[in-house]
Length: 82
Image 1 (tube, rainbow, N blue to C red):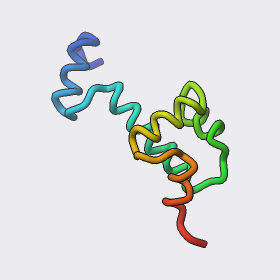
Image 2 (tube, rainbow, N blue to C red):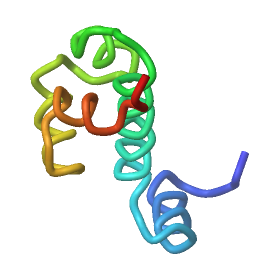
Image 3 (cartoon, helix red, strand yellow):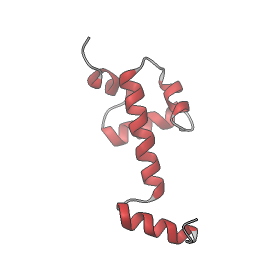
Image 4 (cartoon, rainbow, N blue to C red):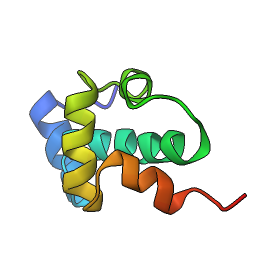
């Protein structure tokens, strides 16, 4: 559709956004996971499955790397007070 090879599309995407398609996909998944963790009572396992992560362990590792805190603390710190 774009008349580009996979490599050409990756280069064009990276030039336009500053990040690779894989990094962009991971960012979107982590943003969705953060929203589910703070807006729902879903388990970390369920959030991982809904966001396309291999398992809860992978989600925990990436959330901690990206946000500096594990999912359980992310949930309590970002959840609005009721």
